[in-house]
Image 1 (spheres, one colour):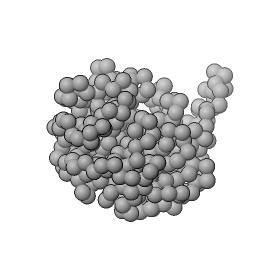
Image 2 (spheres, one colour):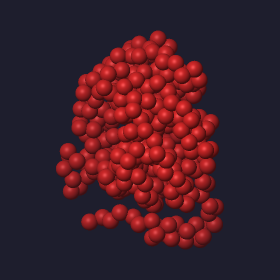
Image 3 (tube, helix red, strand yellow):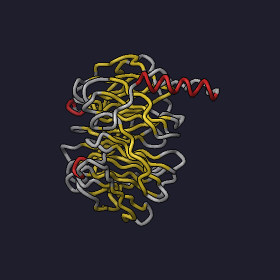
Length: 329
């Protein structure tokens, strides 16, 4: 049986390798992890792998993102029907935004002015002006909306509806749905490629990732996953992240306890990275050298080296970590 990496052993190996090769110390960033069960956000220094602080927040925190200037964290407090705003300097909640009922996930516009929020209970996407705190629109979508992605040019937003099994393409100017694309069962996440050419939509129960052409709005490829010794129903794709150069995609596989590494040119799985239990979401450090997974059942996060696609370190956080975002220290 393959064993999970231990922090001490791998850190020592990394230090030894760094000493032999003359590597510079890793740049420090802060990771912010939403812990769904104990209503906290854990702040982790990514250079040292140490917990800096644990913040009490609203009930059932899930989706988490950060302003483009790194000043504020936005957090879905799902059971409080609000979005909390956390100052990254003071690590205090300084404001709330109207979110609509049961906010699950959201995405920030490229210009940093607008939040698009999935409201699972009311089958809506709520559009919020961050500066004025006004609700600009409520867009009816399919049943149980969750995944949210936005194109690099900010013109198209995609919402995935878990029960309807669709990806809804929404024009951000008109706030109207332009296309509905059928995907596999229980879509959970939508991620655009950096060049805007494709949208990758994970299907948790379907066990696939649908690659949708952004021009034709048609599924051009379906990626499947096979892991020796695991039943297919244990492989449940959730979070998806694509490198800034567009060459590799990382897919969190839920109870499979692994992150799949996919070549975006061939759509072939290159590797399965063993992490903690029930991996949910993923986030890159700004330098793209590390990707971090949240592991809900083992209550930890795992650092994966992007160059080698090897797990480097796991850090214990709060109860049932769900979302993660990284900002400069």
